[in-house]
Length: 134
Image (cartoon, rainbow, N blue to C red; front, side, top):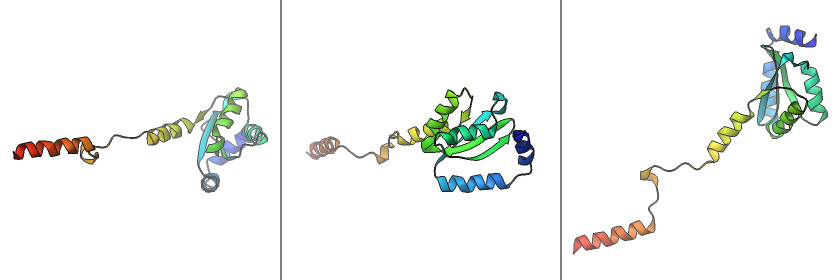
């Protein structure tokens, strides 16, 4: 019943997304998680379960038959563990965030014009210039 009320109320709701945006800024890096609504869990039950184990949850809303909420990025893996342990299916933005971080941490090769010359190359160029001068 509460989920139905949240779903109907969210169509006219601009306050919840605004508050969630402010909370995103206040809580630092965050991860959004979406669970299908037809799994027998209400939005409030999921929030209580995660809060009970110490996970901060905010931005709770029901949209398109999904329960959507946000957790701190530092607690995201732990939240997903508890969702899995409870038998809940989910989608999260954690995988995309980790893929971006791994890609950013991977050193990218420099273009040829920006690569530093190795000292051996400079030495060989000096010898070649000396031989050409002879």
